[in-house]
Length: 279
Length: 290
Image (cartoon, rainbow over all chains, first blue to last red; front, top):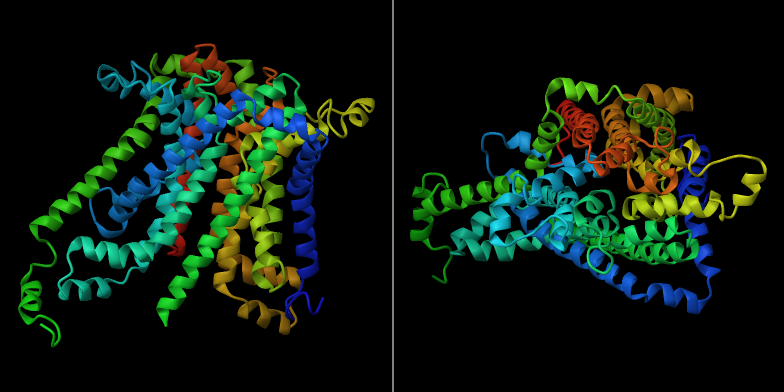
């Protein structure tokens, strides 16, 4: 044990670590291993057939495309919102700041039916978009709207602390030296905030790719058109095609792993940059 | 120019009334209005719609939608699930936070990544893995069938899937907080002869209790609202294995919009209460994250 951990006078290391790893294994790791094993029983050709099925490919395109678009929209507006909340004082600021976490606490089924009601052709917002020829509910645009809502808090909450790190005296110094607003933004603010913004983007993207509840109400769920990959997994399960469901799940799991790793790398990068600047 | 700062420019900046030039005021308000507009469309409108649709046909209809045995069964199932899941995940969260925050050991960051895993995994997969384990065609399917134990399409499956999804929340709130407050007081308590549990309850817990409160509340909100994972394992047997979010879906698909939004309004109130408690906790601890 001595080489495994640094010595400490505090008790309970073995007990708490043991219990945590046991619980983690029982609830998360063993079940995930079952998914991997189920996929492994399939045989290579079946696996490829399921993955490259046109309906599956169409669902990846929608799931990943819409998630990418939503995460991009969130990066832009999330940055604007974070900036507004950090830098400006206006009536209702605290109230809005608290509500940013709403998509985090609100059940996805509720945001799903509520967004559908808002963006349907006779809905509060949909009725103004319909004459412009924009249909949101039951199209891919609806998918993007739902994914944008659930990803928003990730970007705002990542960027807010980073914006506070930006040193005002650096900005003042740059202004004194004749830098314009845009130069100050590009050379001082953006470099400090960039790791956090990328982390927020990746978190929002990762969450959006796997999202189910808020999407299925607004998407319309037409095969090849508005069917997301998680829904395809549910459909395969309902048809008792367990292996096919497992294969699709396996691919999504691999993607989640890759994204989680990149989040960790991004955060390590961000910390290194900040430490480097402190010297 | 080359010899130091431009004096005329310095004087000009100093003479400005704060930074309130015309451009900066315009910039400020365009940022505020963009934010408000974006949030109004995406966040406020859906929130208002939930209550507007629930009360569309008046109070009586709203109340009447709860005089339905299936709706009441769904509420009961949701409360039962949360009552099992939240305490277990709280114990796990405290235990994991103690091991991770109080000790330095190899593989710690990997362990943290694994704890975060359920947040990155699609909720559908969280349900799928249990179907593969305990479903009729699953690894233990036959064994369970012979013993007449049902996990999938029953309460145990719903509890397991919910536990998977809400697994990280308490730990994630506690770990950074416990790391931040340090070990000195605990070490002092132990050296003076206090036991491990005594140290935890009298030294550590008072320092992190507000973070714990928020972690538990958030875990509870997610547990009561989980949809994707529960859909997969529940089998949607009306009045038996439908939780509140699943019941919302059933009513909605039956075009019973008042009923669907009435149940949804309860879940929305739960979410709003969660956010109020979060704000209170942050106000209490002065621990604004920004």
